[in-house]
Length: 101
Image: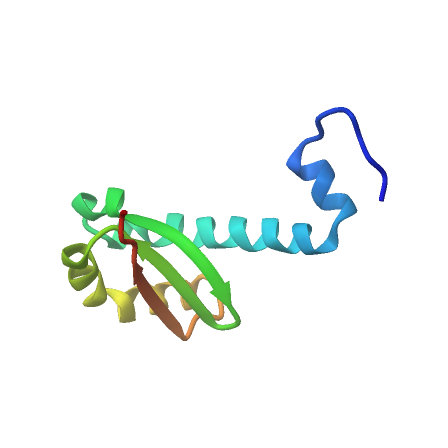
């Protein structure tokens, strides 16, 4: 392992580390999915939702509270269907409520 004594960008680091490159790609994909479905989500919920991890055909949304999760849960079939029309293989969207400590 080569030690560097200078800063490098995330893009440079990901070129040298395949696992990091995969993580960066998944993070971008998840963020893009959220951007695509935001038009279907009420504006009042936008601040309560973050893009989460992707695992195969399952995507996770991180939600700030139970009330937002309950409202969002009703929209999940439409969000998944919309993503499929845009070319993503999404069969399930999971919600994870973030608890603050």
